Length: 216
Image 1: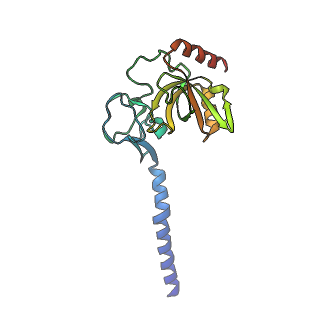
Image 2 (image 1 turned 45 degrees about the horizontal axis):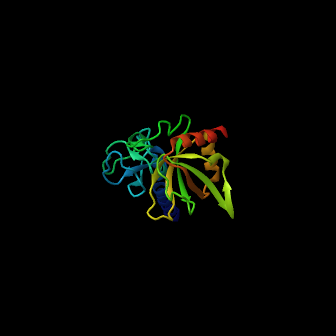
Image 3 (image 1 turned 30 degrees about the vertical axis):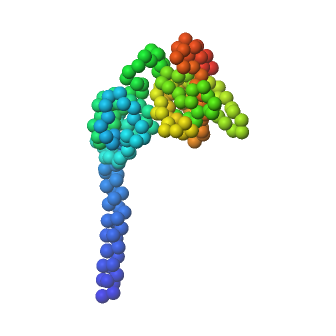
């Protein structure tokens, strides 16, 4: 009689294990999940996206189309290339790295460069407290004293999310080559500081960017 009772209890415990551990694990493998980004409200073509406009969600990965924005960093600072509807899942094809209007330099994103999102603190006392699209900025490190970064002496700004307060971190998208991107990745959580070097002087901007390119 006792053996039957023990057997029944063992079967019950095994069923519990299968229900709460094995089945969810199998289901997860059968129906994997993936993060995506969706827009919270309607946005018109040309509007810039900030962290207030989006939220990450979890969706099924099996039917997730290519080109879906998977991280907030893929979206913040970019511009709506089409009208967006509330709760739209964002595709990179719906976004533009550059403003859709304005007189931008022809080669603002040179061939071989990619857009990179950065969070910067502007150096106090800079002539321009906030960078603008098209500016050339200089990026520094600070460790007891200012430190130049040869790889990031002159960098083109593609877009800017204006800070709410002057002392806040500025979110910018910049044009970087592969080696510059690798440098940024190696720094991980390092705080970068920046100052605007050139604004509204395309001849000087091109000269400095060519000088930066020659470093590599």
